[in-house]
Length: 289
Image (tube, rainbow, N blue to C red):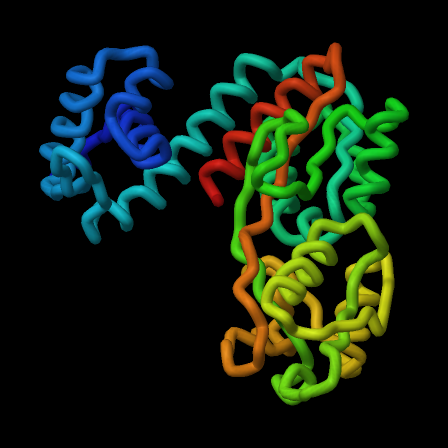
């Protein structure tokens, strides 16, 4: 029987960090090591795996096909490694953490992240509030939340940590709804809403007439309106329900949309449990996004 080779997690962490930072110099800063040391770690990992992971040139770096495959495994291995270390070193971490997030994000990208956190820290209770970004911000400013995930414009300078960025797409029950000379009917959340503003600003720049035909603060209500043909709306591409149609045809007169951005903000003087959840969300969403 051939003995299985063991891969040093430090080598995997160096590889993942280089990919996430887009290069060796920034990765070395994050890992607090010399650039030559990080480069040597990647070389050792490639030798152990018998595969070239990165294509490098003076101005560009990209993953090879083997590198793309191994990156996924590396992230999963490191996630389990960190979960184990946290569980052993901090089994006493307890408390309640209040987290606010928009409904669409809370029901799509957060559940798996929070589930992994709960396995690492089973004595921490999570209270998750799902509301419109405006309501999440109001609750946060009133002291009702420890951590908040909020939608914002990419150019925003209001603080917080960017944790997610994703392309927006137009969606409808079918393309005929947008294939008309009449003002485009929009299903939107109440003002102020990043998605609503993104739709109307893009249409104005494109010279396409529009009108708000349906307003609802509920994600499920907006989906229902779109399914019923009451209008079109926009969503992050990964959050589009399978029974709705993505309208990516320029012939329909629908302009391209800028990416959406999600930022994490935290209250001052966080509890140890809330601080650890903040670190966990930032790390996990950086890997996923």
